[in-house]
Every structure is written in C-alpha cells, then in structure tokens.
Length: 187
Length: 87
Image 1 (cartoon, chains in turn purple, brown):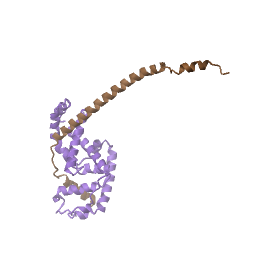
Image 2 (cartoon, helix red, strand yellow):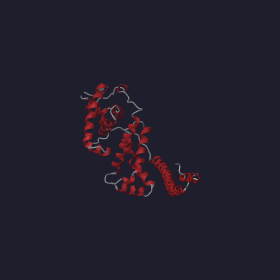
Image 3 (cartoon, each protein chain N blue to C red):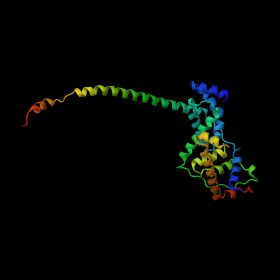
Image 4 (tube, each protein chain N blue to C red):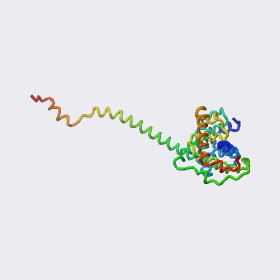
C-alpha cells in the first residue's frame, strides 16, 4: 500500500474528512471505470461511484492494509454493482441486438470502443446476474478467476464453473442474435 | 470465426473505451455527513430505548413485590364464608 494512502487512511480514521476527499480524488477515475461496466447511464454510474466511496468510508476501520487500497475499493465496487444489478433485474430488460446498427469497421482494431462496449454490455445483460458479473470482470477488467473469487468471496472452483457455463450461454445468445452478421469485419 | 472469438475481440476494443469522469468527492463527503447524522439519530434512539427498558425493569421488579402484597377488599367478605361449614 502506498504511504500516501496509509497516511490519509490514518488521518481519516482520526476524523479528518479532507484526507478521505484526497483518497476519493486519487481513485475516482479507476472506480468510475469499474462502475461504468455495471451501468452505462452516466447519472446512475456517478451514483454508484458515490455509493462505493460511502461504503468504503463506513467500513474503513475494517481495512487491514494487507493489499493496496484500490484492490479493496474494487472489491466494494464489484459488490455494489452486483447489488445494483439485483435491484435492476425486475425493472429493466436488455436491448435486443437487432436494435443496434451494423458495426461498420474494416477490422476489429478500428471498431469504435464505445459501440463495442454497447454491444457487449447488451449481450452480457441477458445472462443471469452471477454469470454476467464473472464475464464482465473477465472481459472488461481482465480479471482472473482468482481475483474474481477474492472480490466476491466465492471459491475459485465456483468462479471457473460459472465462467465456463456463462461462456456457453453467451455463445448461444450471440448465435441466436446473429452477432456475426452484425460484425461485418469478422472473417 | 466463432461467436466467442468475436466477443473476445469486442472486449479487447471495449477496454480502450473512454469512460466519463466525475468529481464525486464533495458529494461523497456530503453523503457521509448525512449518514453520520442519521446513525447518530439511531444511537440516540437506541440509548433512549435502553434507558426506558432499564427503568421499566426496575419499576416491574418493585411492582411485582407490591402486587403480591395487595389483597382484594372483597376478601374481608369472603374470608368468613370460607370458615362456614356447608354440611
């Protein structure tokens, strides 16, 4: 853990809120990037980022400092996002892939990243919550099974099994939604 | 190409996406203060409830003793009857 983090956390535990503001400013970009994977609505995403930092503050005394502070924040972020999906599950339905325009690009490297993210987000939204989380962290955040297991408090075997099943489901969904037709650049 | 390979390629592109930036520090501090005020309210309520429970226990302890020593005014009418032989 960085010494600046350690100093700010110690000050914060002594009641100095400005130190916590420093921590928030230091990590808000990384946490925003993570929470953007859970909601692509800027207003909702900002609320989720706030939620992560508020939860982190309220449980700051339980932070042991064994791992970097960012890892701990990311763990809280994944859980906040997972809970958000649970709340959203009853109200929101996924946008069908047919509603997206054909992705026009010469090859995979020239595709607009935000368009790619929209399509991927829409595909993943059809999966059950736990499967969606595993693949979201794998695809968007390049997390390994060990990291996901640590973040969510699941066993590594469970994460591996979920990833395997989720990929199989995702493949079925992608084929049903004619993903390859949308992606003209794929040969 | 397999659908999953296509998804892997999409994911690779997605990782370079520019995400919006927010300055949440002020709002976070505001929410923390609100949470602390709320939790202080709960603590005050808990304290009040605890003191009330203790007071009720003390009153209950003494009232049980008092209740045991209370005799009904009707007993003075009933006591002679208890001594009467019916047959």
